[in-house]
Length: 351
Image (tube, rainbow, N blue to C red; front, side, top):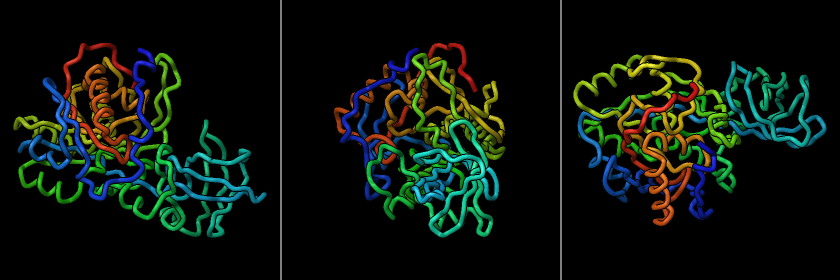
């Protein structure tokens, strides 16, 4: 299967540059297992779900992970943290005209320093001065790391809107965007009708925007991300299945976490650690009955995952409909509610 099999044309004006005033006002394209597409709203979810269903959210919290710095020579540098490694150590990308070497230092706006410890592939290993906890320094100096396709400066509203209302575990540098559509009013309405909720944690890395460069997608190697699927959620999933409820993955990050936690079997088991699972058509899903997800970039691994879940032809027909109907795309855009399609089983992708 080729990378070009997942290309589509998207008018640039359909890339959402800012969130809607109200989270739950986003449009929702319902892709049922059979039958016609339905144009709905996120606020219609209570009519599409039923008592006993289990929504699984990603409770990661986005770090203000983008910082301005200067080199000793006075040249500008930008730090984009990929992952926090310790109390003061991070792995990051550096935007600089000339790459620094081990032992070089960068200066932040508050006068504190950052030492370059070395390299890890395309990333740099950095150590922040220890006079202030790293979290406080990021809150003081950092900016929300909006995706590269949002072509405007970060504003004050992004600090709140590029964060889910249930975010609680700091560590992501990109938002689990399907969760951005939920406000507390919608969550309360769903709970009142008997729809349950549970959480996984997957700290989304900047690698989520990494393009697939291999023509044969099987040659692509995924970036690694940290996940936690707890015993409590596993129990919730078993109970939902026992009562006839459906498991609804809120976003591709949740789907990746749940499928990673299957560990080769059909049951989701407790798991904490790294995942580099790459899901593309031919993969056999067993963890979730529905997927709520945003619209994804052409030729991206996330579009490949959704195509594996619902069938490539069905997904691309839905994307053509979304373009024709002027849906809003990507992180601050609209969403799809996708029901799983039964697909022929092929060899499993890497994990």
